[in-house]
Amino acid sequence: MKLSEFDYDLPEELIAQHPIEPRDASRLLVLHKDTGLIEHKHFADVIDYFCPCDVLVLNDTKVLPARLFGSKETGALIEVMLLKQQDYQTWEVLVRPGKKARPGTKIIFSPGILEGEIMETTDVGGRMIRFSFQGNFFEILDQLGQMPLPPYIHEKIQDQNRYQTVYAKEAGSAAAPTAGLHFTHDLLGEVAQKDVKIAKVLLHVGLGTFRPVKEENIEDHKMHAEYYEICHEAAEIINRGKEKGGRIISVGTTSTRTLETAASTDGRVKTGRGYTESYIYPGYRFRTVDALITNFHLPKSSLLMLVCALGGYEQVMEAYRVAVKEKYRFFSFGDAMLII
Image (tube, rainbow, N blue to C red; front, side, top):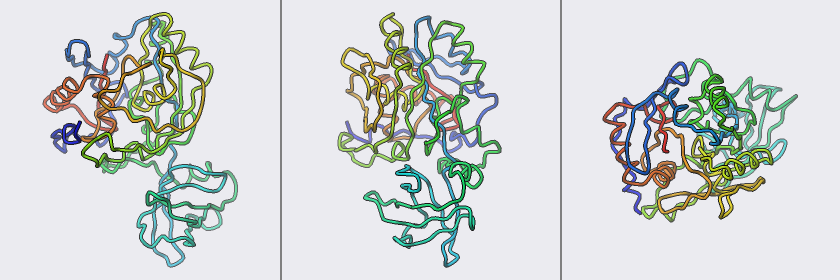
């Protein structure tokens, strides 16, 4: 398929600039993939589509306040975005402005508390930085860092926790798994009361997930590697659900890519950890995931391609046209879609 086939017209005013309160008050477009039927609901209604023995799979990654602002020894201001930790002191980062951020450049974020030195340039135009600090790096990051909101969000959020899921646990993401932002503790309690099992997997979201696809032949696109884990308990819950005839309902494209990375040909998932470059687009045959809760994604993105792979290209693109017509809110703080 061609990249141009995943384009659609989106009025700028439909790009959500702030989250809805409460979390589960956002709208929900339900697409029935077998028939193409579309329903319009609110997210709290998602519970009505779950059945006993189903398994809801969440990604419990936690977003790092990964944007750091500092200055070079010359006094020039510089912004650093953390991408991936290499060791105790060293991180792969993006730097703006980057042209003069050469190896050997020293950056002061807070004198005597957090400083860094650029060690080398990466193959994809980023940098490797070695930090020096006093105390716990992540506690310092909580004090000095800011949430890495996507560039299409121009408003500053008052509560940084609104860019975290309520079940976020393992810090390491450069962006939120946004489909999970709609869940509240109460709604998850209702899920459990309905005898729907909840399994938590981990995928640390890197900015590579959102890297635009530039190749017109979509098969030529390469995904950036992202770290994932599936523990023994989660694998047992998922595999037991499959054995009982339940559906595996994945919350977000990150959970979906994690499950499909670890899936056997019979649909069972394996315990493990590592890096995934899983790239899912139409024509892919899903082994584990049966249904998907997701947000509305950018045109020409690998995320939209994954959604089309599960829901059917024509049906998903029609659902997007309907969502635009009905003025759904799009992207990270936007409304949700259930493909079932």
